[in-house]
Image (cartoon, rainbow, N blue to C red):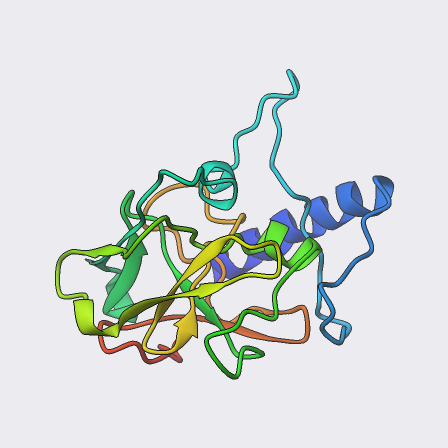
Length: 184
């Protein structure tokens, strides 16, 4: 409950920042009263980027992604990136092609790669794939789902995006089989 309250407060603060900066693109998805739009990056007073996904969303063409697994307490074994940050699926994605762009892709940065992503832990290499994004970058997919990080996760092991309803649909962590984990 405390984690949910902190996530809601953090998101509300970022919505204020996004509104002040004129950010209104919802990435093409339908919006609802619970669809908040977090700012692109958390910043310190010195205006230094503290978003752990900044490098993932702006991955260079030479960066090869890694998908592995980690234990996430009550959520069980879930997929994470090479740095241990939680990966999510977006229920609005009905194929391997991402529907999350603009402000959505800022709040939920796609896991980008150059070449075939590596796997680790109990992640299955036969379930890993890629898909081209509208900007031409290559996004990692797992079991047919484009995968994303969440700007509200500040460190490896955070799962603050679990079950959030943003940009027209819900977001969930994935298990090693590539299925959504529908637990709070």
